[in-house]
Amino acid sequence: MKKYTILALAFSNLSAHAGNAVIPYWTVTASETACFSVSNISSSDVGFKVTLFDQNGSKYSGALLYPVNISALDQDTNLPAKSSASFCLQKNSSNKFGHGFITTSESSDEGAKNFVVANGRQVYSVNSAHSALIPINGGLPF
Image (cartoon, rainbow, N blue to C red; front, side, top):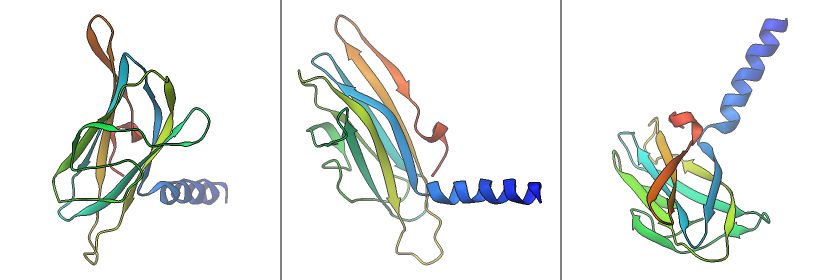
């Protein structure tokens, strides 16, 4: 019975997170910003949305720098098959930080399996540019 309980918990945990991934950390300051990419590794279109929350739990709606295939945060966006979206957050002096979520939605194709992978990096540029990886779903598709 114990084996079945563990197995059931494992599968219920997987299904609860299907199509969602946590962005564990992001920040924007006068000298640093976060950049993200979302890639559709499926053979059909997939919808996605990036929602960020600041240190107070409020939705962050700052401007995007260098947006490709995305125009705003917290907005449903269609990503064609095998394509990618990317953006950076606009630097500002208000020192915002927090967490976020990437949510995907099903394709209109019956039976299509849609998967995306995502990546983030924190870019620091005071005297020299360097960056640090922001792990999203361990690099695994979701």
